[in-house]
Length: 174
Ligand code: ZN
Image 1: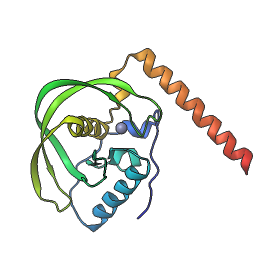
Image 2: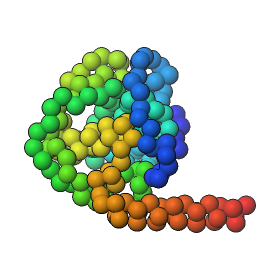
Image 3: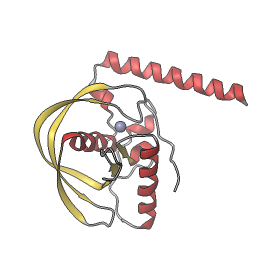
Image 4: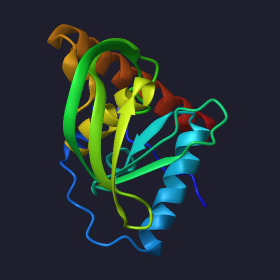
């Protein structure tokens, strides 16, 4: 298995809309395993394929503290939304920033699992928030899109500056 590179805001590749997965095979399952390894190592509780520059509708999540409750959602579609919840969210593609975002409290989702079997599950709590956040990624949407334009621009500038600094440091170290 290997750790994949995670794209960071404002990388334009994060804005691409992912296309449906046609075939659930061993190649896809290897990607799934690599996405889990990348997510656990980060560490994070969810990762969409878009974030690792694979523009297919696939996400992984595990909100458990023991990292023993892995979820794989392929071609997820939200069938029902219920209630409203405001949660402080972060994102592996927007490192270091946490902001309040309003989402549905519960969602019922149709998807395929890692064996290509169709499933319908109801998610609530943190997992519901996580699934909605990751499905947004597949549509090229980021949690910063829910913030004010001024706030989003501030985060954008800061992240670009941090990245430039890191690149200069790396260049200096060579
Ligand atoms: Zn994210």
